[in-house]
Structure formats: structure tokens, C-alpha cells
Image 1 (cartoon, one colour):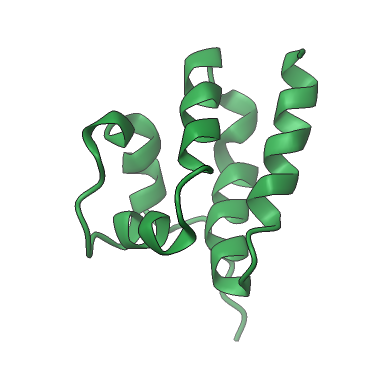
Image 2 (image 1 turned 60 degrees about the horizontal axis):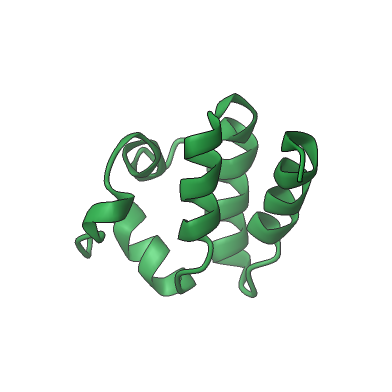
Length: 88
């Protein structure tokens, strides 16, 4: 599968998680960072999306320790939470 198709699938999967909170967190994160990822980072994000939303959200908020395989640049960026739109 080519890069463009993978990114389109990841965008869809990121924005269709099942809850609005997870959609905003994971979808917003993908929109902010996904286009610039290397092939290895795309593969890691694909694996991350196989995890439960509550776990991903806990890792992003720092309330739970992420598994070693997810630690690194993607998880560090996910933890910044500066990509979640907040409406007033």
C-alpha cells in the first residue's frame, strides 16, 4: 500500500474511534503530525491505533505508563495535548 493510502486510512481511523473525546485527541493529533511522519512512525501509529482508546488517552495525559514499544517521539508529541481544539 502506498504512503498516501496509508495516511488516508490512518486519518479515517484516527477520527472514528467511537467517542468524541478520543476522536478529538487522536484525530487532532494525526492532523497535526501525520503528514510529516517517516515510514517507521506511520507503522508505529498504526500499531498504536490497535490499542484501546482509554489506554491511549491515559498515556497521552500521563495517568498511565505506556508500553516500551510506544515510547519515543510520537508518544512525546501526543503528550503535549496542544493539538486538541478547545471551543469556548
